[in-house]
Length: 231
Image (cartoon, rainbow, N blue to C red; front, side, top):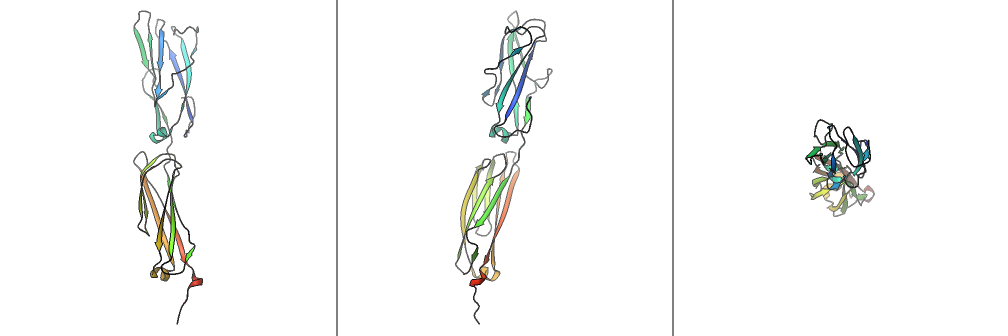
């Protein structure tokens, strides 16, 4: 990999491939294959040959080429991009000579590029009313759940402590928003207390099974200008 981290959705990883003939005969019929997550990086590669431009890998010769891969949401959810290439060729006797790419010439380990994951959920709760005055008044709430991270969050549960409302969200991708409304009717005790405090929580799982959550509280106070005390 010759590009630099960090990587985000839509960014590109640039790979440099190097083929070298460390044997004692010329190799021909060279076929290079690199299919990464369904993307054929080997298609259309232009190889630079260190010796003659004759499509033959001569003894001691080195070929180089570069290819670009674009980061997808699946890659970010996985946390890595793992890439393995393969090359086949023929020696002068028609024998197959092949190799699998590695992180160095002496191994076949895949090239693994880490992708930073930042799981985050944000929940906000707002009330349409700024105050209440009487028993039976209705408060209208809007709950908004947003995926403010860079990975997909699944199995999301939203709980409204005041109204008892519960909602399930199968999944939210980055920047996705889920909105729900609910209501609460003022009771005599709310007038005595002087305010209604409403707390909402949200929790879900990131691609690694780790918990992700948030909470929010909104308070609506009684409108004291409308209160009357009789004696």
